[in-house]
Image 1 (tube, rainbow, N blue to C red):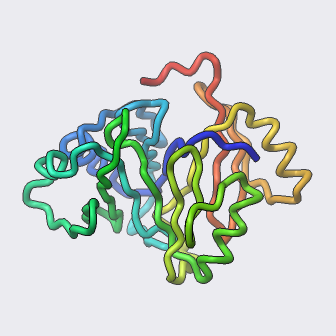
Image 2 (cartoon, helix red, strand yellow):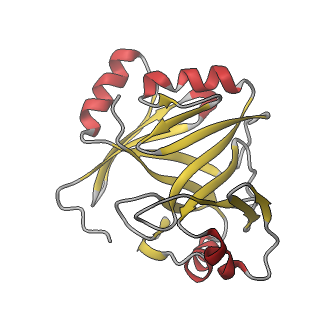
Image 3 (cartoon, one colour):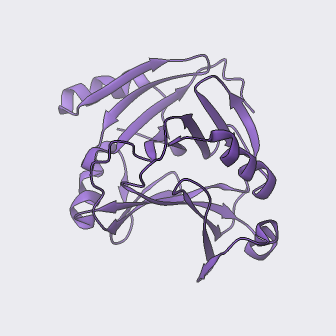
Amino acid sequence: MRPKTLDHVALWVADRDRIADFATERLSMHVIDRTDKFTLVGTNARRGKLTLFEAEGPRERGALKHVALRVNDLEASLQGLDGIAVERTDGAAYFDVFEGLRLGLVEAQTDVEYDVDHVALFSADPAATAELYGPLGFSPSGEHRVEVGGAWVEFHEGEPGNPERPLLNHLAVLVDSSDEHLEEAQELGIEVADVVDAANTCAVFLWGPERVKIEYVEHKPTFALK
């Protein structure tokens, strides 16, 4: 497995327009794409994004603790969150949006504002879970976290459960060839959840540790999103 970057985090939400409006009005994102099934928001279609899939509510947080976005100037970015309760930590700030979604802003050098910095997941055994991400192409990076293309997935002590209506749909990583990753997954005996050929991408979805679904997505040569 050879993922290049963390491409997007996909969520199941009951009111995608409300969350998309928050992202565009408060976080300087824009709507990259909108279909009858999902809304894609971000600041650059080729970098970390949020995909909001329409689903029945209410949703349960399940495995997802938070999604953190990277900004060059935290104080300047927080001006857009006036009136929202923010929890400050060293070089970062976290806040609740809607439907159990918790976002964060992390100050770090970036050439794309609001790129995905990391995703935090609850895990019954963070150390063991981090190790299991190795065969999936994620590199060890400190205690209880793994890295892909300068972004991280962190594992925090907590029970992810098995909710009927989870908030997290899947994590997606960018690859050069989804077909090659499908073949490799089959050789390794990794459970394949789905294979999708879409207008701008083709992808294979695999079941990762603790039933977190991971998409290996290839941008087609005709990829036209911005």
